[in-house]
Image (cartoon, rainbow, N blue to C red; front, side, top):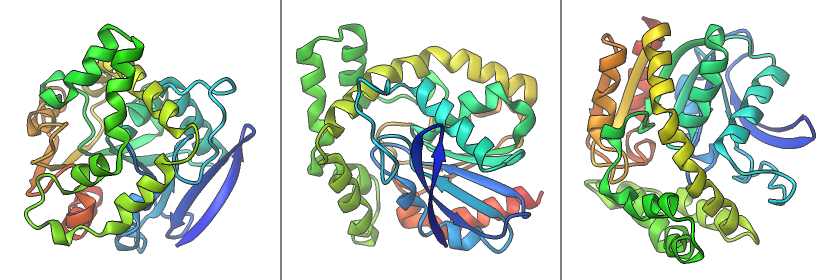
Length: 281
């Protein structure tokens, strides 16, 4: 494993890298409130066959966190940085693994450059209304009325107890979840200004739902080889969201695991096996 930072149009982007350049590329995109650290167990299990790269998104992990008046924290902007990151890294063709926020980010890149995408692996990365649970209702309220009261109501999602709940909800044995992941997430969330950045992204998530029809059109038109590896007990993205991909990619491979939102915390081994089988095909 290598840990590096690269300049992407003036923005320092931190990334983890494993495997040899020249092997098939696999880009890993994390979600909320995590970082590339979430792939720490998966990457060594794939590095013998793939060149695996996992960047931290702007405002997350060790990538730069520009002030909000200098950088608009929208999913369009996150996707723009990821797109440029792949170009600076000379990733002309790559499979992409998307999780949570990584899905609408990666799907924007895929729509703009379908010729670059060799395959998609979605781990609880949603693109269908079917997949949105009632847990989104407080955020939906903020979309409908972006008032200060509705914004402040979402601050509870940024507290350590909320992070712990996201990691352990739906996991048969919570003692199997290492504290390293959620503790590091809490460290980054506690940085000055991080809360407002995350609240900006909560509001802009509405743009992703608005793009669902465009994402689905991309799937129907280009039929990328598609694997879903999904924690079936995810409180935010329901298994129906995984099954829905088959409407647009009939031969999509859907695999549900008996775990929660952060499936790699408990099932990195089985998910790595599924990825190896899928990409070998």
